Length: 419
Ligand code: RNT
Ligand code: ZN
Image (tube, rainbow, N blue to C red):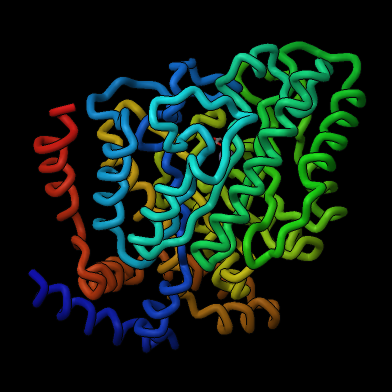
């Protein structure tokens, strides 16, 4: 098999040379594509707190496929399996509810570095960086739908304290791992029906963010991102943290804006937003996902939305300014299979983007040759990308083509179905 892959690669390489593309250079560029793996695909955004609360905040994981991780050990085993099936180097993206609480009840306003030390150690052992998220949902103090923008001062303070602690933990994570930890704040706040005091909630959100982010940390340790959203289930009429709100906040306060491609009107494209927001903010965080009719968080596939995102990043050498994270959770199929398929799809989009003769396309565009541009873009779609992908996987020592399917089936038999 590997002989066939090498042969196919040699032919593909020549075909790409003919259009001025260096396949080896494209593969080398993949070294800089470090995708942050969202831990929550392994357990449907459940977490390890002692209280077994419902997932709230207008996000939903549907399905009950067997094998969900219910302990830290299981989750780490799953993540190790995922890492073993992916080429390149990734990061871990952890939510605050996934602390190593050792069976103790630790409320969100009480979490400390010690609850995450074993995760930091795990990342160190894997040789990967780590990102972090405050968890402002699935909690009794979020039951009325408001957290940082709550008019209940006790609740608002509680969530401010949570975010403050998460940022301090993030700084320590970045310090210990020697790579900045991105801390993302997403809140579900909003209202099902038409509210009257939109302004009041947004004023409170701004105030809470200012309070929670009062302590500055060196950016070598941590960076703040804020994630906007259009609407959620049960939060249809107004989202406090809208895109306008957070983009303004990010620009004014030198924060990262987190763009989740499930969080916009269906015909808006995050790929189109990257070059706009990067004129005004230093960095962006992405939550790559696949919304089907709504922010459904389906497993990422190699579709045009994801392709545009990757192309915009590679065309402009934005990898040092765009931090790529994933955000999907499907509980209806093998979760590890979902994880690997989705992540490999995102990676494929980046490799395809790296194989684009961008300079030639720009030259054609600047010459006003728009038929030629269209034709070239169409022809590029059927270039032998798969041969390059397989060769890249082979080089990285991970399964090529469909071979990872068998590995997941085996893992299901040996591990997941025994849970
Ligand atoms: C919700 C946001 C948010 C969450 C995760 C679990 O719509 O996308 O990023 O999915 O924090
Ligand atoms: Zn998201």
